[in-house]
Image (tube, rainbow, N blue to C red; front, side):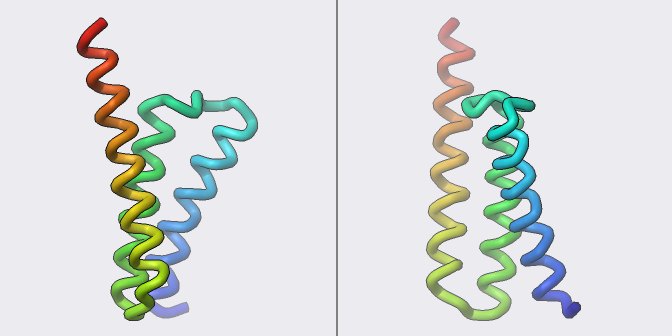
Amino acid sequence: MNYNDTIGTLGVGIILLAYFLNVFALIPKEGKVYFLLNILGAGIACYASILIHFMPFIILEAVWCVVSLAGLLKLSRVAISN
C-alpha cells in the first residue's frame, strides 16, 4: 500500500467509524464527537484525493468537511446561547 492509499484509507476509516458509532447509538448524531470525526475523516480523505488528482472526490470530501464544520459551529452556538 502506497502513501496515497494509506492516507485515503485512514480518512475513509474515520468517516466509517463515525457512521458506525452513530448507527449503533454509541454517539449522538448531533454531538461534538460525530462532527469532529467527520471533519477529520473528510479532511484526510480530501487530502488523499488531492494527492491522486481525482476531482469528484476532492469536491465530495471538501463539501463533507465544510458541512460537518458548519454543523459543529451550529452546535457550539446553541451550547453558548444556553
